[in-house]
Amino acid sequence: MAERMGFFTDTSICIGCKACEVACKEWNDVPDDGFVFRATSYDNTGSLGADTWRHVAFIERPSEESGDGLDGWLMSSDVCKHCTHAACLDVCPTGALFHTEFETVVVQADVCNGCGYCVPACPYGVIARRERDGRAFKCTMCYDRQLGGLEPACAKACPTDSIQFGPLDELRARADERVATLHEQGRTDARLYGASPDDGVGGDGAFFLLLDEPEVYGLPPDPVVTTRDLPQMWRWAAGAALSLTGVVALSFLGFSDRGRGR
Amino acid sequence: MRRGEEPMVPEAGFRSYYGQPIIKAPVWHEPHMPVYLYLGGLSGAAATMAAVAGLAGNDRLALTARATAAFGAVAGAGFLVAELGRPARFLNMMRVFKPTSPMSMGSWILAAHGATTGLAAASALAPVLPAWRIIAPLRVPVLGDAAVAASALTGPLMATYTAVLLADTAIPAWHEARKELPFLFAGSALASAGAAGMLATPGASAAPARAVAVLGAAVETAAGALMEHRLGLVGEPYRTGEAGRRMRIARALTVGGGLLATVAGRSRVLTALSGAALTAGALYTRFGLLAAGRASAADPKYTVVPQRLRLEAGQPASVPADS
Image 1: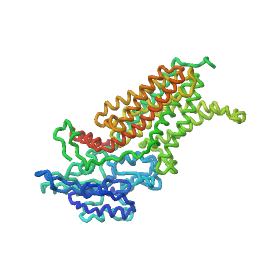
Image 2: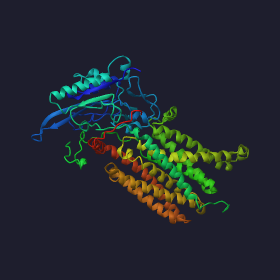
Image 3: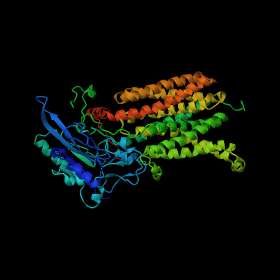
């Protein structure tokens, strides 16, 4: 297996240009996701979905002194996290979702039967079903480009290197240095999100440097892979299944028809 | 966008991205998915009832239950296939056997259960066929009895795996209900199968079906009440809005139908009323569960607040190293 590859999205240098969104759509032939004026700052894509594989979030921070007017901006390009323990992959009943040799998570479009189970399983709300097509789609970390030795389209297009692509170990080391630098500069709100292999999904293949709490960016503060609790779920289901049999058996006690009315 | 200053009431101050959902709502459609859940439960509990009725010598009820089990499995499979984004690829479910996917396990359970209940029903109905004299030497009834015995194993799984299907998602109202949901499904399945048995079996032979219906309604009601009580904030979708309305209707129908079943006896009118109420109650439960899942996903509060509390308590989520 090749080295684990990943994205490090440093939101402290994102300028909100959306070149990543455009490059992704162009390269991957991702269809139109609707032209909607959302009235939420400069965000006109809203969230990740079957037709949106990079989403740039715009957070307007009101001035703390006066309560109105803008004090600053947060901008962040969101993407599939390519979890170590990926719930979408775990629950996929056809094996359409798989781990590539780069340890990224990819849907095989020729296998997916559109059951939709991956959609509510994802703790980040990334993967979705394209209803007019019937199948599920999400970021592939440009699997085809990686096979050809190229970096993903979004990282290639990013003019500030807010989106960095490379071996995950290198990216994590670089991210730690970046956080230290920002803290030295007084940006004590800088923190990494999804970088730790000890979190509820075993670490993200695509992690972030954020300047506020994750939920402000539309990210879950403490995600967990749902299948972690699967053994417990089956135990309770087994208990219920046995109870069902017991209830049926109990119901027939005293009602034996043998030798009566035949 | 402000954070609450008092951690005692975190829901007052949770933060979000313009109030948008964090997780995606289930894409499953109405009526397909809830009706499949109902039919699967009906079929599973009916198969179990067919086996026990056979052992108890209640052949008339056993026949009804065999037919119900086969109908539920076949019709349920139809709704399941129709729910897929690519129905023609249904058989892709059979290309892997994947214990981490409740839907994969469910597909295999449904396949086995459909086969056993189909065979059981076919063998029971075969003697009415004109060609019976030709196939009689094939010992179809023996095959049928073996199929009934096997479906007594697949039936309870069929009725309860769907609880794991819902719980194994990031939807807080489903995932956090993972202990009660199997019992809610088991109870609802019993009530459904009991109702079908009552409706399609003559009075005297239907007595055990009435008992199944009453006990099932009791289990469903108790599990639902316990679930809503234990879940607190995360269980709010079961009490409010469209989902809350459906769950309340479901409970009224289930309790009413269950109580009626205790006094229905051989009265055809009371039996019909009770059976219809229990059936409608079981259906409303499934439609309510889907609506609650959608509501739970739509409001970021249900995702953010419990996770934030976990972090503030110094107990962040983690996965075992071996998983």
